[in-house]
Length: 355
Image 1 (cartoon, helix red, strand yellow):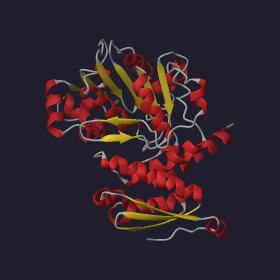
Image 2: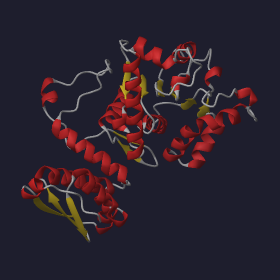
Image 3: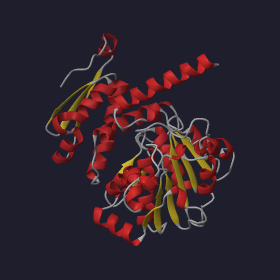
Image 4: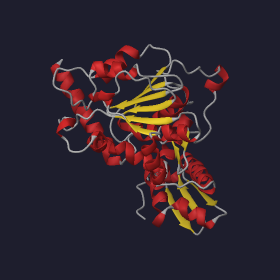
């Protein structure tokens, strides 16, 4: 394992802690194949870690060692509870434990319908790794960033949620997971997936097959997430029976979507009229989640995005939550986060030059 660079001052103030875990198999899963999870700890917390059997020795700044101990113990408990832990869970737990120490957790500012916590609750810091989670029959997902935490809590409490931001932040994946969880516990009767098919500049009429076959390629990311949450045979039966429905955006006019979890993905590619039409389909007992990236609009030049307009017009509307992800929330791959930030910086530079 490559040793992280640790400066002299940190070495002088370092401490060493040894953690021992009772279950050898769980400890092995915690450390990761070839100690890859421990390597994440070393990289992100700038400490030294060495494993032997079911023990790990941590050496570094006392604060970092304390954070690493909290992370390892929390993830060990997840493994003991039957959950799988990946490198991304380690990264998310490290982010959370550091931010919990710095500031208390507050609900999203834009979720006006979420009651503010009592004053004594605001003053008290959150419990370590007290991140929101979504449980389905196949897996339990824990928020890996503070914004994901806000997003999951907003989906639980609001009837209409906007999740916006760059690719790789988990906004669509978590939306599908939440819809699957609602269906499993009987909170809704069906899941409706929709996505405007304009990314490739093609019109559906020119694509081969029936309507489902035309739309399927555009909805593949939603399908992939569904198969992660629900066994494949159940997904197929649900699609056949209409419990999971593919609803092309243009074909939703005139419908009332009651007792449903409705997801509109890639919403930045809706027109203003399409967005108004979609939002007004919300029926009794339903939850509507709208996701998109306002920086990736594929509409013809000069045409305003329905998502951008909705974010502006509906911000003060009670009962609607808006959660904005940034490049700091990218969990897909660290390189993706750097790419998003590079494009964001270029966009800001061009805006400043134009002004």
